[in-house]
View: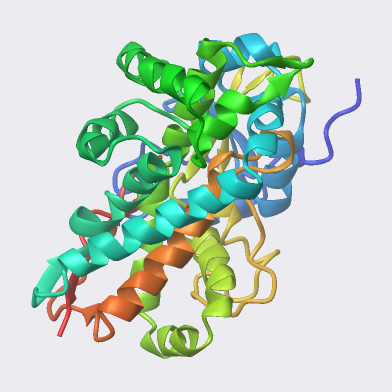
Length: 378
């Protein structure tokens, strides 16, 4: 069998002989020294304490994420049943629904929610944007887009933060909550995203109830912890570079590039796991492969001055929300969240800036972002 092109030589360079581990002391505080060692000396190595093969170079990680022999974790049961486990199946069902009025409803929900949250801070002198904006905006926007009751936002927000992933996960409480809303939309459709899912058809027939609830769960999962972390890093990067922020303030069309650059430099998921369906070079069948997005995004072989945040970088790459057949449903919602979130903050709170004092660092090994973001609002 032919080895995949991303597999590097099995013998590391003479610069290092003992491979480091992701579980080494200090890695969670600052993983980038370890990432540099892995990229330079151990681009493919088995990390025994962590229990996975590590891939760290940009080209290798991109190839691994697109390799059909390396599969993502299984989706929720309803989506899995409809797609026979095909990683693109849930997108094939949901993507047609995210058009026309439903897409407009999604964008309107994000925009409306961003302004509501920003206005709640308008009378304040200081705030923590992580706790009071980033952690609420993605889930609250998805609730608005699906047309769910506003008063249920806190309940749904808790589901999003405790177990839902971008494939919906399996939360019996969420399924039970969504079923009566699905029944009402079938009887009285509206312009919201849940109505669009209820109207979607496959093989000429409406989707069963469990499929609609599973796909709605996928939307809510996409609005969970990962998007909140990505938004926190995005705002932190821009607040750390006020000159770049001022230019984006006058040219909002540059926001998309600034968002992509933040995902490159500080991806919310530093590590994405895959499972090998068959032997791939030294990787045995059934082994776990850890694609180190945090290392790949700062690969000097791919990016000039990779540790620097440059909102106007010409080509920041696209790894943070997956690649190839495993690209994530959350990407469009996350992008809308970033664009409308930043716009609302700059409109309602034009003087927002970092609060004086030490800047809380990013934290986390697998998921990583600032846990707090203190700002001065006036």
